[in-house]
Image (cartoon, rainbow, N blue to C red):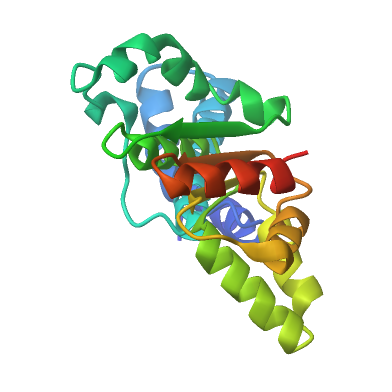
Length: 217
């Protein structure tokens, strides 16, 4: 048993396990390089903070229901003219200012323009900023809320969709939500910024416009 063991035990009891793991190594290094205890304490605090930050990001990704880690550097802006035209706006969305300002964002375009990719990359960027995110499709969300309304667990399910700081809803406009679906969608996304990925082609364009008009205040 060394003189540092009691301190390690106290750190572990305080749930500062990373500090406890690195304490002996950093103290030894400090003695060899004539560094004071404040330098050691600062290093230990940095290691603990980084570990907690990485764990928080991992948890945000798990909570998000994203099935892949997509980043904007994978996006081919040369694939379509609309991508080039909107490049500045697209990059700005990844700064997540709209989340902090509590604003909604709607992505509308034809198939192949990258709406789902961008929705997922923005959602993943939010995860990496330690922002609670939930990614879902409009139909999945409505079906869950309708089922919850039927079994009297609607309030609990509404909280599930309302609690994230960012709700990302894909495939809005593929199918008509109907009056009940539109009402439940509006309730489920009432308290958070929304990133709505709307489909726009043929009849789907009218459905998307109708959904947006009903669901986005």
